[in-house]
Length: 89
Image (cartoon, rainbow, N blue to C red; front, side, top):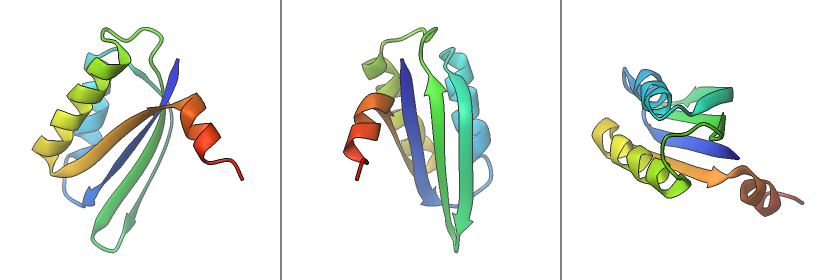
């Protein structure tokens, strides 16, 4: 199963490292990543593979949500199929 992780918030040191570390701990592989700084705001999208994840999707979502609170950003994860369907024209 693949997912789309989005991270949005005020830019500061450690966001990429924190998210990458949490995904690695959960054995979630990063397949692709795009990130940018818009003014003072950090935005990132990651395509991830949850095939070997140690937790189910909801567990991963909860872990990332908690990490977002600690980092001061909003972190979301969605099933890639649902994400793709929602964003088709």
